[in-house]
Length: 601
Image 1: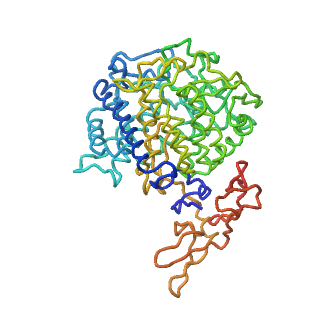
Image 2 (image 1 turned 60 degrees about the vertical axis):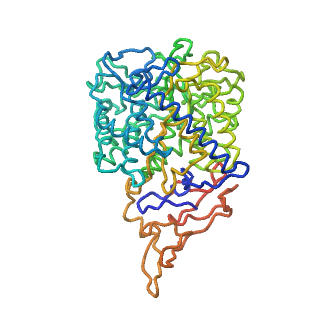
Image 3 (image 1 turned 135 degrees about the vertical axis):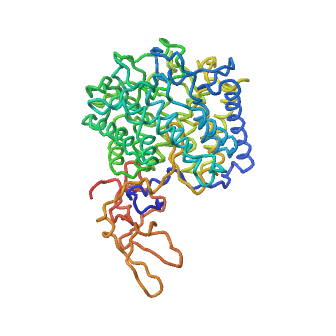
């Protein structure tokens, strides 16, 4: 059974190490090493075609317009459906470069990574009069800077000659400080919009989304751990706790809410996203035909679930797991219909909309982290079936009518299906997922590749293009497709990828501390020569049922009982054993896997 090597991490996470398995480049049956190398190079070519065109025609502005070979300073437009309060003197924040840094290292390009880091260190500033969306700025800029700082100081990619002196961390801390006024509300829920120079504007909208205020904890928490300033994590955690307290009796949360009153605005909810006007009515992009570039997570719930699970793995706080476990069971109970997930009213659990949204494609990847492989596989296959039907994955597909949504027919190069494909291959080593990746790569090259980069698809029924290359195409789509065929970046290090694809390492020093009284409850003995000493699984930082120590030391938990089946599958609780480190009974989940699912202490 996999084990985190940390004496301080809550041990319920032992079953979660599917998060990122150690790199294994052994060729899959039916998909040999030569074919993998060929596909890897195809993805590499895609990334550099997008990256080099950005650097040639758009840098240092935010994003590339590949059809006209020009740029857009889009950070202030992301989520801004009515294009209100646009800045007059904002000239970009090199958004695509920031988003590309970790991908450059995944591809092994240390030289370009160093050039990007040093340029940002000398030129990037956030002292600009620009109103930006807190959620987007957090996941894209703050997350990109924090991740790149960690990678720049990592032993494998550390910059040479003392050139790097934590400049990216300084920029991240400055940006985090500019976020803080957004949290100054009676509820602790942050405003969706913040002016980087002046804070919250007068008459600012008080409406935000569940994802918008519940998906900040990874980046803000990591910033606190790196700087030693607890305030960033504290405000994000307060907002998350407030949001969770607003759940219904069914453990469901709505989609949009008011940050001042703490009241829900939109009660229909799901695992994906929808777009809502201030009045709360769902709209199609026929009203805003040019806005297909916007991230619908701004108006959804998807990354809220994702960040509960990933925060638990990164920070080791049982509170995150307790929230996620309750929310996950509620999703399975009220949203799931076979392999699909519809939307429902948070108050009653009754279905509201039967539709696929492209952002839902992240869900199988999240289920892999939980160990619910069977459910992940079945949903993933349905998403891929829709991809095959249209050539790409449309933004919205009507399940009850088995047809494309009449207006939301675009595909902005989203990464979610590629992400889930990568996770499913890591968990199963089934070469079919490599074939899925190959077909996705061929589709992207055939439909979206143009001379000036990769263009979004405005209409999947005609393959009409949109003049926009999103930064997340480089930070996520290309990254996950590359890792599908070459995961050597992950060797000897476990990472959590943020919702924008930025890797954060799993570090024991970031884990919440266990109570001191915990450790003596599981004392056993270590025998070295003729002398026995008291020790525990925690103090030795090993998984005692399976791991031998140096110098022939062996630790065996006194209470460990293995699961009946080596793959941890089960049909009933009796087929599950006793956890080796907590001495708690493992039980059978609704997905058919043994784990620490109950919460009796």
